[in-house]
Length: 228
Image 1 (tube, rainbow, N blue to C red):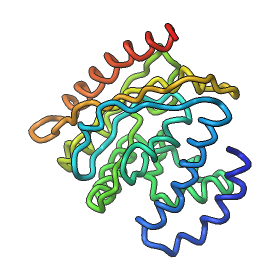
Image 2 (image 1 turned 45 degrees about the vertical axis):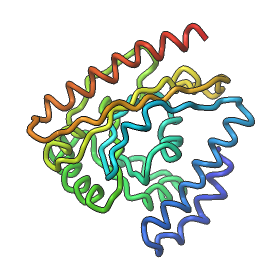
Image 3 (image 1 turned 135 degrees about the horizontal axis):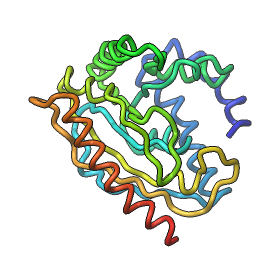
């Protein structure tokens, strides 16, 4: 993965001159390569359940965040997307520069209300352009079996824009450890829940519904990982 970044990122920098849809297709081929390498070298594959729940247009994904796996493989599972992420990632040489071409919403996590306003403003623009927005509401990677308080930014974006929320649970952290180097062989399960219609709902209600669905599914997914 590290070697491919050193090669691929510089090659993608000139795509800044291209329209976003073409630029995204080219850059996201790196994620396709990582999926192939994980399957061949680490014997780590994945299975997706609930694709029938995906809405026809752009949406906001609220997902569990356990490892780097989902930041890469979601590009293979969901339509063209961008992410709400910490701005420090943009400062990483080569990787951060290529990441910037994917139009992320790079926030200062200590900015409070200003960060939420940025998510609403830039998220609305991305959604109206047909780009899905991925939000990890816990804000950081969380080890299997643990949980953090869900941030409300993604739910506020949904309430303000009317775009649906797609809750996603997965057990990638059981195979790609949060701070581990080695990967465990197996099959990551990704479960997509029914879309939440934000119309007529407050942000607090939206995030509560998403959190309840995600965490209930996580109990099942992680108990299955332990049995395997």
